[in-house]
Image (cartoon, rainbow, N blue to C red; front, side, top):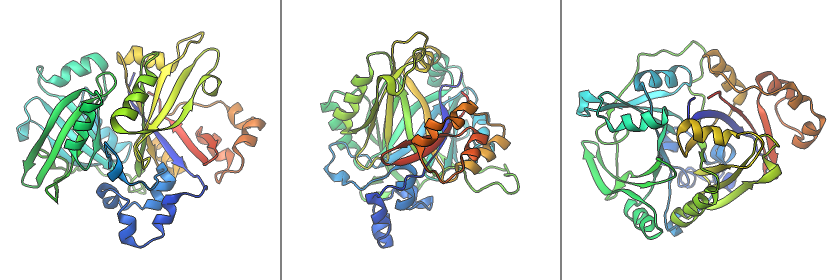
Amino acid sequence: MTATTPSARTDTSTAPHPARRTAQQDAAEVARHLTVTEQEAGLTAEELATLVGLVEHDETKDPFPVTGWDAIVFVVGNATQTAHYYQSAWGMELVAYTGPEHGVRDHKAFVLKSGSIRFVVKGAVTPDSPLIEHHAKHGDGVVDIALEVPDVDQCVEQARSAGARILQEPETIRDEHGAVRVAAIGAYGDTRHSLIQREVDGVRYTGPYLPGYVPAGSTFLKRDGAPKRLFQALDHIVGNVELGKMDEWVSFYNRVMGFVNMAEFIGDDIATDYSALMSKVVANGNHRVKFPLNEPAIAKRKSQIDEYLEFYGGPGAQHLALATNDILRTVDELVKEGVEFLDTPDAYYDDPELRARIGEVRVPIEELKKRRILVDRDEDGYLLQIFTKP
């Protein structure tokens, strides 16, 4: 079982949003609310408000300021094939690489991008690589949810004072492209958060990823008519933890990072007699980084959370949600490349109560039914989502 499965997501909320007002200002004002990665991807504040719910927030007042996602780092059994899969099936672009040819003896790593999303796929190439132990315990999965921060030292001191595990003390690494300051703290299970400061002494790092990585490209050619990219941004990463541990990790993100509670799903909201779970969602101030945290609940059968904890060998990142501005085309393109999605019964789409609950959506229900896309609505609007098979 694959431990982490991306999900295609589109958010078509029509509710008023503060970030939309920002997007109507001049270009300099808009850019102030975007990360460099988002600007390089050609995204706008208005687009991100729609796709991932970005809101205005002054991070200078945060005890642990988080600029946004930096990278999602996977450990896999075969990094070369996995990188090719994300290019060929998911439309990502290979941008950087490191490995034995560049002085990294024990493993190779490929860096791929789609919009503002960055995946780093690592795989061992020697039997004594530290990655071997992680892969033997968990299989393919996410080892590191790296966050870009404006001040690594401030974040580490805040984390230390709040009782977090410091896995790597702050250090500055350099190459011909400049300097990056890095550190890392522990999260649930064997998951870590690397903290990446890409501007040191007023100068932003200009390399393709981190010092030690070199620019990389691929001879892979997309099919005629394939879109430039399928996904624009990372929406959230779900963490699964043991029974009784959800509130502990919600408190961790509140206390250590100053994240706020966005939502919770308890009891009948998200459970049946046969499968049950509880979930709470935390986010940083601008809602760019969101972590739903799940734990199993007592039911007649094992829940999906129980199964994950059993198969993965403990707590970890269950899935990623990738935001797209055209979920119909995205699903169609992924299916053409052999990606399989979880099925949804016809009754879901034919249920009059469901249609009444979701109200009007811009996409015909029949088009959603054809692709097995799910609809969720709350007071802020609705979103369309679908999950890949693990």
